[in-house]
Figure (tube, rainbow, N blue to C red):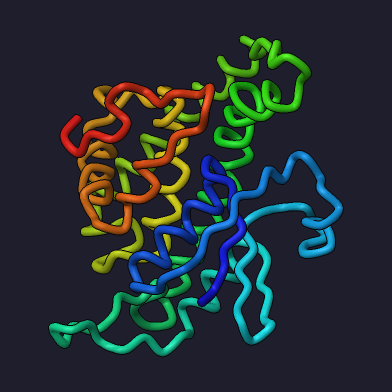
Length: 233
């Protein structure tokens, strides 16, 4: 069995957990707090970042994109009903390029402008400070929330133009976006009623069985928003 080293509120880790669930791949989970910089973890991944996927064959993959690309190439047999496994990067060469463009958008731009800042100000800084006495910087939060509105409008635009964010098929682009938004929503930072098209898309993703595990996540001392696990919110 493969093992995934992750942190439960890390959006990159979440994206791989969702992808593994979509593909029906059972994986043992080992939680790591990457901000602690443990030497044992740095020996596994010198970048000090999660997720890390390792297998019994000695293969170790670091980083969400490399893991997703690897999973996308695996020959997954049909399920018991004969239905083919979903593809993380579906379609022809142009469709797959669009999936990768959006993955880059969410894993880089959305993370840089929103997710990373929220995680640091509201979670990581408290976990790293002695006594958990960190107070979020209100100026950073104000700028981050403005950036989030921009990203939600873009997601709404994509969802209004297409069946799924990258095209006709559910893909790793939807997974990457949902992984970030699920974490942001955990912290109660998404004004869903202001973005109905993005909300409708997220409700569709949220109802997929692959989301159940991340929606069950709880970090002690950091309770989620009340509506966080609800499929109808």
